Amino acid sequence: MKTADYEKIIQERDIQPTAIRILILKAMIEHPQAFSMADLEYKLETVDKSTLSRTIHLFLKKHLIHSIDDGSGSMKYSVCNSDCTCSLNDLHVHFFCNCCKKTCCMESISVPKVQLPKNFILENVNFVLKGICDKCSNDATLLHS
Image (cartoon, rainbow, N blue to C red; front, side, top):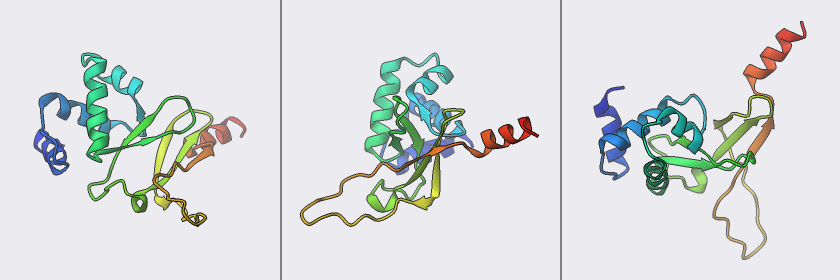
């Protein structure tokens, strides 16, 4: 992708593109699975924590990224699709690997609809499957062959 592509993605979410926001978005998009603040700090070691934190907060507020509480003790994030509004209809399942500790979006699997009792109002859902990812299960298969 070119810089102009990252600028367009940012502008489509009504965010003012700056050099640092473009740099952070590029790092987010290039990350192969959901990422934590620590992942970004490691990849972007010249960017201070407060700038990363403010940018993550802004990107969340504008629905450029979504957050994932995978139970690992560290909030994870992933870049949203261009048509995502982070509404309940956009929610999808996430998978946490117990071996490699990575979390990935399973965008093709929607969060199941739940019928709540009368007067309960659903505002958010966190649906995380836990197990062994395809890479780790293949590695384990190879080791036991």
